[in-house]
Length: 252
Image (cartoon, rainbow, N blue to C red; front, top):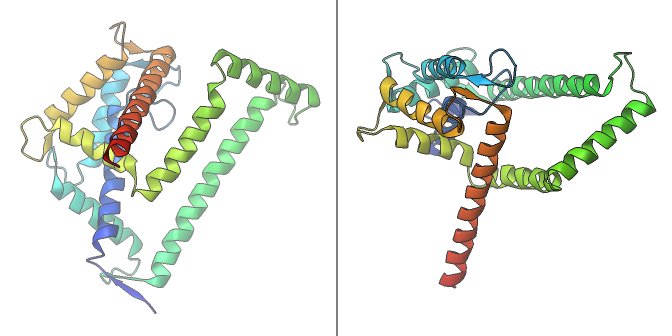
């Protein structure tokens, strides 16, 4: 029986810390996200300032693991301890191989349930007459709709999908850039440099993000504004990657 001590390895501890930050930090500031995990509470594809503020407050509370009103290293430690305790089924302060396998199986089951849910949603979208089955005509109509959508976006859909897939693979290989971006957001929010983010600093950073996406300053973020924000982010990442390649080439 293999046993893992509560101290864990540095690599695993860092991974849990990054995951905890990514859980709240990335989505808290990204006001253009929608759906069940985003600020668009009523699902009307418009994020109001009230919805944004409520979502930001919820994410801050979730990240503030010890409830002291400040996001800092103590919260990351509390999140690590919480994660460890969840896996440590018998509460003996050590993780056995069986406990870790059980946790892995639970996560796999959750992922499968989510995939099944997404599959059902896709099927329901195809079944336009709600007959419980998809006819050839419905499949043809869906295929034509996808062609039109690709044409309207200038044929970018396939390239964007490949870019996202490549990025996900690259993120895993580099230890998870998503968590790194979340931590970078928190560092930027720490305006007084005390290595902690107060509720005021968090709200200020979140509001700045909302105002940046809300280009017409009407207190609402529409689907078009979210789309424009995503495209701007992709363009900025592409520019940074291009600059990085040039620097590497010049150093050879």
